[in-house]
Every structure is written in C-alpha cells, then in structure tokens.
Image (cartoon, rainbow, N blue to C red; front, side):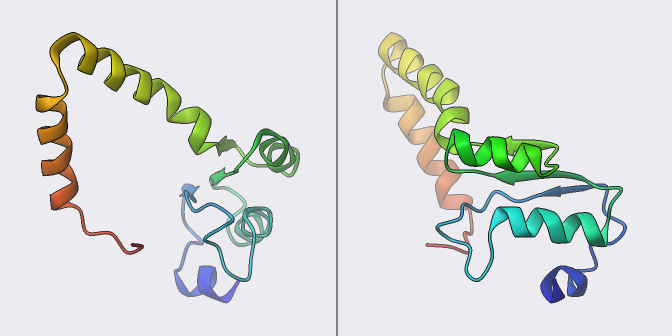
Length: 108
C-alpha cells in the first residue's frame, strides 16, 4: 500500500500490472487489486494471472481484465510462425533483435 501511495496513483484512470506472481515479492495480484481499488476506486484495473483458475478468482474480486501471458501470447506466436514459414525467419529475426537491443529492461 505504501508503494502505491508513494507512486501517487490516486488520480489514475487505468492501472496495469503485467507482473506475474512468481516475480512479485511480499504481495499478490489479488492483494494489489484490492489495494488499488482502495486508493483509486475510479480506475480500471488490469492484472496478470498465471492460469485460468487464478484469472477467474481475480475477475470475481473485481479486476476489469486479467492477462494470462501464455494464452494471450499464443495468437502472436501463431502469426510469427505463419510469417516465418511463408517468407522465412531471417527478416523477422533481424527485426526482433533490433527491437530487443533498443529496450532497457528492469528485470533480467
């Protein structure tokens, strides 16, 4: 709660947490959802779940949307596979490597 308060999220219209439970330390997405609802009840809240059961629980607890990375990334993976099989992976690989080299990640 202190971290969220210090981040001054009170006027936020949308809060998105893409951090899975395995990376969160000392809290959960359910707890994060609960605390965000207290600090800024007007905000739409999107959180991340690792599975369907957890996603349904988060919906029942009031999440506006729940990301499930392994399910939501599947359509993108299919697109990459189809493009790669059709035209080869060389251009896709080069484009993705250039994109990744420009990113500055907080987590390794």
